Image 1 (cartoon, rainbow, N blue to C red):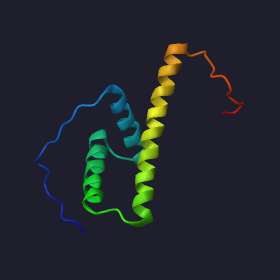
Image 2 (image 1 turned 120 degrees about the horizontal axis):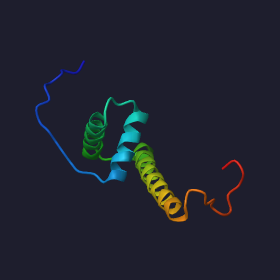
Image 3 (image 1 turned 90 degrees about the vertical axis):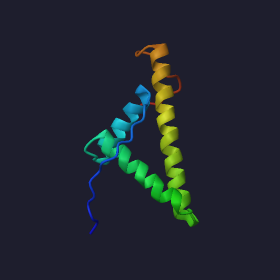
Image 4 (image 1 turned 90 degrees about the horizontal axis):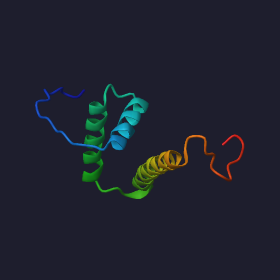
Length: 99
C-alpha cells in the first residue's frame, strides 16, 4: 500500500484553448476528477516511462498509441477549422453514407 504524502508543491503551465479542450475531454474519458488530476497523472506517468528504457514490443506499442492519439487530435482540429472555413452545412466530398 502506498504511503500518502501531503502535496505541497504547485506546477502550473499555460495551454491554448484547443489544448485545454483536448485535456478536458481526455480527463473526462479517463475518469479523472479534474483536468489538474489528469495532467498530474499524465506527467507522473511520463516520468515513470521516460526513466525506464522502453524495450521490446510493449514500449513500441505505447509509443505508437501516443502518436496515434496526437495525430487523431491534430486531425480533429484540422477538421474543425475546415468546417469553420466552409460553413457548418458544407459536406466533405467523397463521404460515404453512415460515415
